[in-house]
Length: 444
Image (cartoon, rainbow, N blue to C red; front, side, top):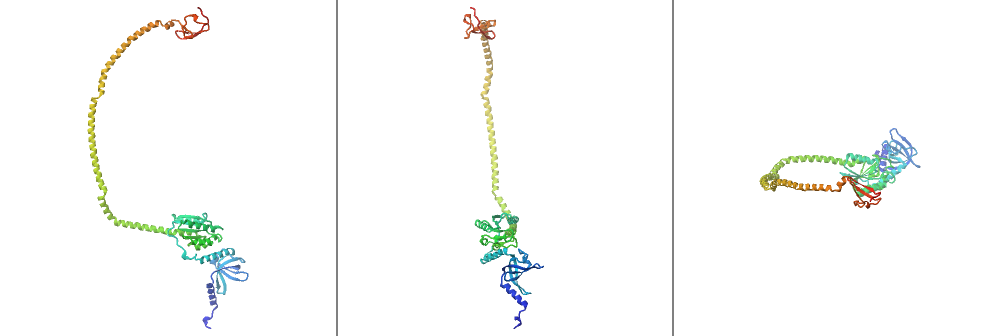
């Protein structure tokens, strides 16, 4: 037997460890915790047993600080571990990387089974992942309209890409119906075909809170997206099936907003650089062509239609001034003729003749008025004489001397008492006024 065929204990344990680690992938294992020890280094050591056997387990500090529970003796747990050998003692053991209570551990097992199916169908392959568009003008967001995720995303976009249009496809992100609503929101976004990229996600929570994002139907629908999808579920330590299937995984919703706006900021910076280069190139081009432009400008000014137009305008002004002078001269001639005709008209005017005839008519009018007065005075004197004679025989004059005249009801003058009857009314006229009397008795 050669010396190189003789194993040392260290060599044996080392090679057995390598064989076990290479032969076995990570496995899920469920059992009861016993002999739990938390070392001062922060590492955990315990045994995992069932009714027929047990195995030693070591869980180092970098893994156990992410555990959702601290194991207790007698507790049923589910662990994800690698098979190894502790070489100094030759102990076969498991190196745990994940540890959960058996209840939540069932969810983790379901997570791994779903992941395995999707991996087998090629939906987790990196070559099918698409980068974000260089310029996102309209972004779709699938999340709760009242959650912290939408506020965080909008805050980042307002700061980094204020011009980006955002369309929210609201959905529940927790609960029994959340996965169905997320699928409906994705289907709506695909049908409307109005965005350049999509963000799907929510803020942090427990495994149960985030479980809707581990739905296999949702994962397969994400894989069918016509536009790149960024998955931003929970915190950085949370990983969901949606994160694995999506084109890009973001640690948080805010990080997702940073991702979709980073290219836009880079593009804006590039546009600013191109603008500065364009302005500089324009300056250089203007400087180079400025002399030629000045020369052409001078030639253009010499032949410019404005020059011809100025000459035509000056000639038009001259003709206008000449026309104005001719019109003024003609107006002066017409005014002189009008003055001459006015004088001749005044000399031949009937007004003057009327004035002369009016002067001749005035003494005739005076003589006529005097003759009329004299003619009227003679009948007036005669009328006054007849009036005086008439007055002497007038009944009124008799009344004025104290006499009166009586009338019956028919206004007949009473001259005989026999014309009256006792009780009959008699009207009597005096020189001044009249009265009515009643006959008491008559005397023949």
